[in-house]
Amino acid sequence: MNSIPFSAASDTLAAASLNAEALVECARQIQVWGRELGFSAVGISTVDTRHPVAAEAQAKLEARFDAWLAAGYHGEMDYMAKHGSKRTRPAELVPGTLRVISVRLDYLPAEVFTATASAAANANANASGSTAAITRHPARHPGDWRNAELSRLSEPGSAVVSVYARGRDYHKVLRQRLQKLAERIAERIGPFGHRVFTDSAPVLEVELARRANLGWRGKHTLLLHPQHGSFFFLGEIYVDIALPVSTEEEEPEAQLPGEIDGAHCGSCTRCLAACPTGAIVAPYQVDARRCISYLTIELKGSIPLELRPLIGNRVYGCDDCQMVCPWNKFAQPASVEDFAPRNGLARPELVELFGWSAAQFDARLAGSAIRRIGYERWLRNLAVGLGNALRAQLEPAARDAVLAALRTRVDDDSAVVREHVGWALEAA
Image (cartoon, rainbow, N blue to C red; front, side, top):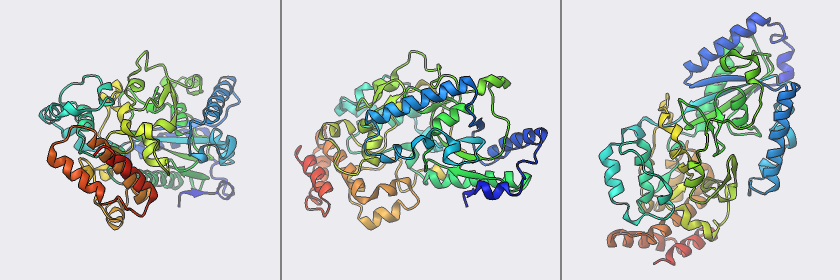
């Protein structure tokens, strides 16, 4: 169970009976329990925007969000436009909400840190056929795990899956741990109204985490932290308890949401320059219609022709803007084993994945976030990757293997798959 109706919980008056001292102790314990559950940080923010500083920030947030929607930058993600102001006002989404508990959960599997300098150097030595998108990345230290990851973008036969999606579905992992945290709170204070969120409802999680002092919003729109970078998941628990809010250096005014964007990125624009499709149209502004994560995950139909060559061999998501961010040299390994790569997704090959049957797709990706896009979109994405491989410099044997794989699906039952396979074979 991921929630207790606020009205039902309030009947017990447990939350109302807590005095100030008990609330402070509860907030302290939440920090302890959160660490025990594997969260790298836990913060608490208020939903009260009556303070002038908070009210101004709220108005700016809503104006920016409305402008983003008006520009059509959400693409086919119609759910972003639903629910009205409930997305930006937690107390309207869940009436009775007084505070939001936000958490960070690092997800980098330990395996990514084991890439050696020689492996990265060997991969770079084979990058003579890299696409124009790859040359956007600046030089990096040999042996840096990010260097090893980015080098795979210049291996035409490789299939690159976003790091977060290589292991168990984060929705399940995060939700279970958040629910355990809620249960520990209930054990301490009695039943209370709460609802758990894990990227599954109209919640602006980055803004809530920022208000809880878990980091600042980077120019790529993701949350950043100076000791953890941005390779982490965010989750929330809306509660009807007036817990003391998290503050910076214990200054009461520090928690109140002032400027929406942090100033810790300075003049750096590496994420903007690194985006293969130019989706980060301005600092803190992403046109999802051009974002590879959107194109390979959210988009249901055909990928625009002009964007296909820019996708390269990225078959599910894209980490480029995070990989080039200087703060991610401080990214930390996951504290839980759930995010370790499964089914060879750390370094898969396009031809191999394209050969999976629908039954194999369902079986091998059971419990994975990838499975939700379905078999058709999976094949569509792989067909684009294979088409880009044909447009790169491949050894004859590798080229023959790619062609053979594509030709097996020329008459696929899916019109979307057939169309993308046809495009890929235009390079034959």
